[in-house]
Image 1: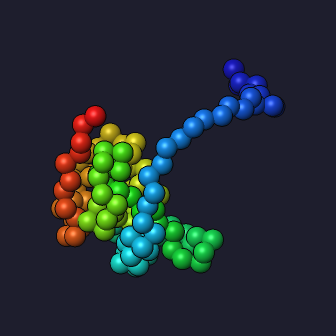
Image 2: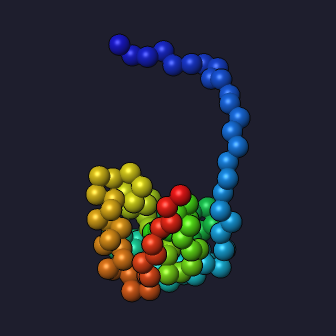
Length: 113
């Protein structure tokens, strides 16, 4: 049976903590990528609102694991490869592949809380 949904969804407030990221790192990673995904090597799937090829900058070792916000830990990925890093069944193998593929990467050991 098809759900009815909700015409006036309730709202909720949250408090979030975010890491401040170095804009120069993001800019450099995107420039070096030259519009190509570091995961699948395909061209960016579309142009962003800024007129540049759209790629996400992904920290291979997550900032929440106390890793660095450096070019040795950041890759330009298409939205599909970026989501693959977070949600796929093979995300660990995919991450290892990025370390093997991108020469500037330095493996960082995550801190355990």
